[in-house]
Image (cartoon, rainbow, N blue to C red):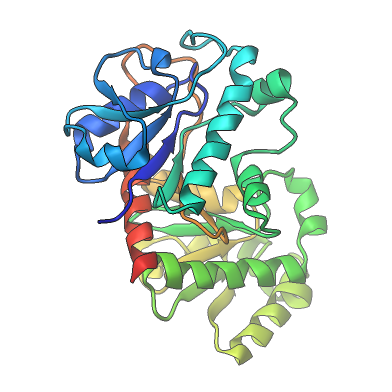
Length: 322
């Protein structure tokens, strides 16, 4: 039997706790999981405390298995508590330790609030992804947004658009392609990944008329990697890459910057998109939304993305065992 997924609590003042309960009600025992956090933050009694991850499989399907982790204070929906920041970080560290020891098959992370962690615990990382890479001892990881309709990978992520041409390098593009190709094989069971690579400029530069990065940077990388056996298409014009007929021709799209990747997937499947970190020695997924302080505790947050993230984590963990 596959080990359960470790679902971290995220910011307990956000929608994470209520979505964990809602996801369990939908999934039941189809996706084995346990939540790590303070039971005081649940806002409901539809859970069962466990003392070990393996005990999660013994919990009735209508109750959420909770591996307790004490926090400094209670949590009020929509009101971040700096004193709880250390607990949020500890839960992430605990989840990594459990997946590395084999007691969990994967990690699914509920959203954190970076400023709250910085203010409360001097959190020094830009976000979850970088912190997980640090804990895993990995230098390079890749962010993929995935749904049944589309998988996208941005080469540069949370940077100003004006900085992208300077930050984009041949080395960065090559490593992104390599990690994406390996992730599709290992985690998604794609035997021969087909990657579509976007250009940086409109119309992929149109032969240099609208920019030269396609000629001087992107094309040389693609040609060199094609010679190694990678199935790469591009550089392609981003405005014609994402219609249904085009998507049928590739397994993932490599994009040069954040919005070039995320606008199409959020347009196609806003609630079903999952944040996946490729390049880690373990499976990690996350719902593609934030803490949503403005609706926390109101009972209107939708669990669709968390459900999709848990399902995908389960599928990826199973793929790694094949």
